[in-house]
Length: 120
Image (cartoon, rainbow, N blue to C red):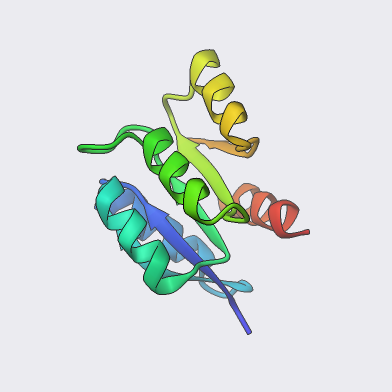
């Protein structure tokens, strides 16, 4: 059975790119949230195995959204996928318990390796 992935990114291009990369793997994109509010609601509905979280989102930031999700579901597996992860962002994420990052641009092998490591 494939593992469920919720993609949180306001870019439809990034969503389609990740979804395409997951085809033929043990992972399946089951949802796409374009902002933090959608992500929180969809997490509750889908209970994904992994969440890919962009940093820059309309409304709540990716870190604020991650904090909400982890506040309710402590075992949530969140991986930051961003081109804008600066040292302070990495530090802030680490305080939330998020230590997995993929920096844009990335390839399929890098993505799957990161997912496998998280669920390992």
